[in-house]
Amino acid sequence: MKKIQVTATAYNSLAYQTNSNPNITAFGDSLKPGLRYIAVSRDLIDSGLVHNTEVKIQGFDSLFIVKDKMNRRWRNRIDIYMDNDIKKAKKWGKKKIYIEYCIPLKDSIPQSNVLP
Image 1: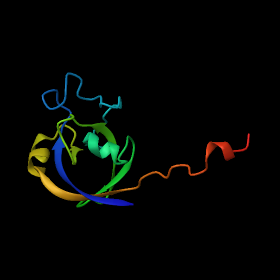
Image 2: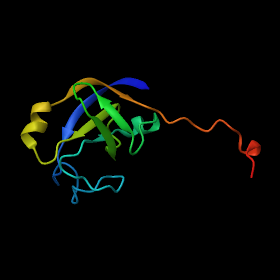
Image 3: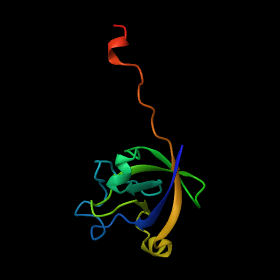
Image 4: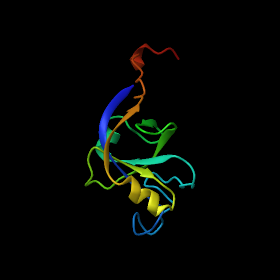
């Protein structure tokens, strides 16, 4: 498990907050209202917070899934998907919080030692 502090904001499935197709993520997934998704800054992707990683967010009981990535200008940041509920997203605002996630283990056996 890896625990880090990030800046957390919220976003909605609206064209003015995303792009002309607000229900499709940068990874090509379809956003489904009611599910717990997040977008992550690209530096966090490089740190192991990759597509479909489950994330525990401080202040929430359920896990979230990485389904989107943010514009390259953002660093050390997550964006919590809040359907079309603009009031809920504005109420969340911008916070510094802790998140936890597992980094997948890499295969430590050299390929030359693998039997056919």
